Amino acid sequence: MDTNTRGRPAVSLLLTSVAFFMVALDALVVITALPAIHAQLGGSVATLEWTVNAYGLAFAAGIVTASALGDRLGRRRVYVAGLILFSVASAACALAPTVAMLIAARAVQGVGAAIVTPLSLTILTSSFPAAKRGAVVGIWGGIAGLAVAGGPLVGGAVVQLSWHWIFWVNVPIGIAAAIASARLLPESYGPARRLDLPALPLIAGASVALTWGLVRAGGSSWSDGFTVALLAGGAALLAGFILRERVAAEPMVPLRLFRSRTFTAANAATFLQSGAILSAAFLTTEYFQLGLGYGPFATGLRLLPWTATPMIVAPLAGALADRIGTRPMLVTGLALQAVGLVWVAAVASASGGYAQFVAPLIIAGVGISMSIPTSASAALGSVPPAEVGTASGVNNTLGRFGGAFGIAIVTAVFTAHGSLASSAGVVAGYRPALVVSAVLSLAGSAAAVAIGGRRAAVAKDTSLGRAEGIPAIAGARS
Image (cartoon, rainbow, N blue to C red; front, side, top):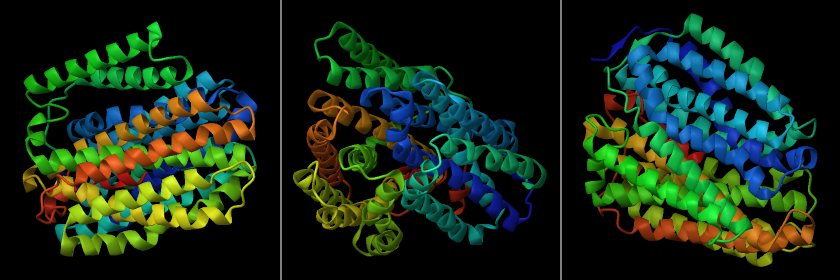
């Protein structure tokens, strides 16, 4: 039985929105700062990608467990602890003297983000009456879209001072939010679910081993002994995770949900969509800065035709999906993004002007604007209302893992064909790697064909206020 002490709704909206925006913004801000980090701390592209993937993997592995801990121990209490952890880890990132230390701090930061993201929504929705929750969830989701649009631009502006400031800026905001939240937010509890603790190290170990193996394969070879061991070990841990979920009383990822063809197809599309978007963002920020010589802020501005398009098109796409169904929107959107990315790869060079990228970036932006609001809707619309929360947690987790997988794959391709040593080396790696991002998007489009023909929409009832209620939507965007 859910218990809640409802507080001041406006205060809850303000505090949770600020904290969620900080966490959602962080992923893309860091991607924009990678060339500056490389200039000071060094490291190959295979090393630098771990500053992104350490965060994403820890984030993905911790979401469901964090939600369960909040239900059991008190959502406000766990949420405040997550804000403090995120803030301390941000300070550690800013102070990191080496890439290895930065990667370790980013992993801890990801754990904090895994706590803040789902619980910010739960606390927010539990502060409002059921009749107003739909509008409140729309505001929360809009914040994620704003973070995607503003991430490269904000990151570029802050990096002009120093890359350390992209982390330092989190510290006062996070601490202030933690203090205010502890004093002003209502406390609430959910059903006391069992924690599937044995599953956590299995899925975390599998994701790290597989990601590491993929990245290493690009720099050495697929037959390298350590690479084979990493991939085999990751596959074994993944198999162990699946076996564990089959027998667990309350599994982290309920496998029964995958009996639905639509749920399976929608989650496959989400996984591949996230992989395509984050890998393309990772590559293109490197190309614009190290290949074409633009500064961080100029790079953020030049990415706006792609990243800001969802702010305009996504609401229209969501409304259209309610009329014609999620499948045509998702299939067409991911195919359009693939076309845009292939076009960018085709015209990329070490000396070309920016104007040639505007049209393909807009096409890719329109594509993700169509797919972002419909991938999660298709997944959640395929399950009974009582399981919307669980389905959303699964969808969000797979989206985060998809982002890490996509970055690992394109890093392997980039490393095999190019390097960061010169603009020519960046272009040589960028073009084939971006084609792989396009292939991921096209594969997501193909997976979406299997989604059922009936309209799939997020259930609009009080189940939206559950701990994992809507994070999948934000996860797909960020």
